Structures are given as structure tokens and as C-alpha cells.
Amino acid sequence: MSTDPNQFFLETLPSLFTRGVEALAADAQAQARLADIRAARGAVQIVLEGEGGAEIFLAVENGTMRGVSARPDLPLRFCVAVSREAASGALGMLEESGNLGHDKAPLRVAGLASGKMDKLIAKEKLAFHVIVKNVPDLDSVTVRVGVGVEGLPETPGFTVTVDYDDLEEVRTGELTPQQLFMKKLKIVGDASRAMTLAMTMMQQQQKR
Image: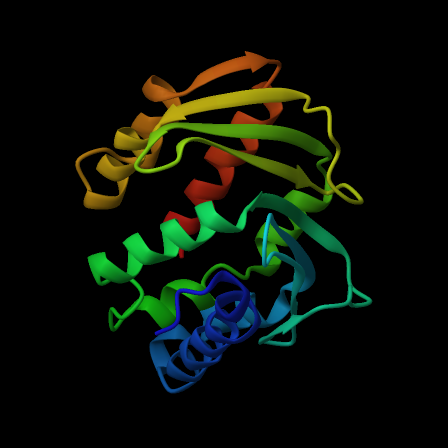
């Protein structure tokens, strides 16, 4: 499976999404979850910065996902900007861990779409930076994020700093996402609304 970020977002992720939807469609017990995924409608903007980078949009509608280079005529739910080098490193680690090739990977990718989540996000306008410290070979990585905004603001409403090792503990199951949010994040600025939204989204995900 390709870990080239450009190819991953344009081709690999949509392919995993399609396989996940097909698996749910064949499962009589999963029709409510499938209906929620098919109700999702929106786009995610991904900006891969640096040499070889690109601007990519993931368009989700009617239970399908497309990776495209031009913005689709859909509500923009998320904007994310990160260096192409950091994205490549993250995908490489996911590949090495077996997460990308796991049998449940398509279902997890399909589960990223949710009509219920869309309704939650539609009420928000947030802009923030996430700084990941002590990243192997990269030291510090900054991810710029916008929720419910048009484009990526340069000035964040708040900044979240997290250590790479803490993220690794979440990936391996040694730390829950809730523990990460409550105990490990360092926040500068008013992130109260964002934290409430994140916790609500995690609760909704667990119900599915």
C-alpha cells in the first residue's frame, strides 16, 4: 500500500473507504451505521506543504469518497495543513505497524464519515494549531487545522502541544484518547469549545 501522501489521499484512502462501505452494505446488522455514513456530505481540504506537496480535497457524498485536486461543490468541514515530509513519515509508521493493512482498516476509514458528525461540526468555527514535539527525525511538527472555516487561518484561536510518545501510547492502546485530552495536552488560548466538541465526537464514535 502506497505511503506517498499525495497518492494516499487521492487514491488509497478513497479505495479503503469504498471497501468499508461495501462491507457494511453486506452486513445486515450494520445498516444503521451505513445509513449514517451515507448521510455524510462535505469536503476536507488537505494541504501538503513543502517540496512535492499539493492541495487535495476529499469529497464525501452518498456513501462515496473521491480524492480531487479542485475544491468540490460541497460544504468544507475540515481544513488541515502539514508538511509533506511529516505526512509521509506518519503514513510510513502506520504501514509498519500494520494499521493500514489491517482487515478492519476499510471499516475504520468508512466510519470517518457521519451525518451526525456533520451536524455537530456545522455549528462550529474553530482554527487552531497542533504542535507535536519530539517527532523522530523531524523534532517538531506543526499541523494547522480549521473546522467549519473557509481556508486555513494563519493565526490560531489556540495552540495544542503534545508529545509524540503520548500519541504513540494512544496508538498502542496504553493511553485512551480521553486520557490524552484530559491529562497530556498543553493548551495555550481558549480551547474550551473545541474540547467539548472533541469529547462529543468521541462519544458519538463509541456509540456506533
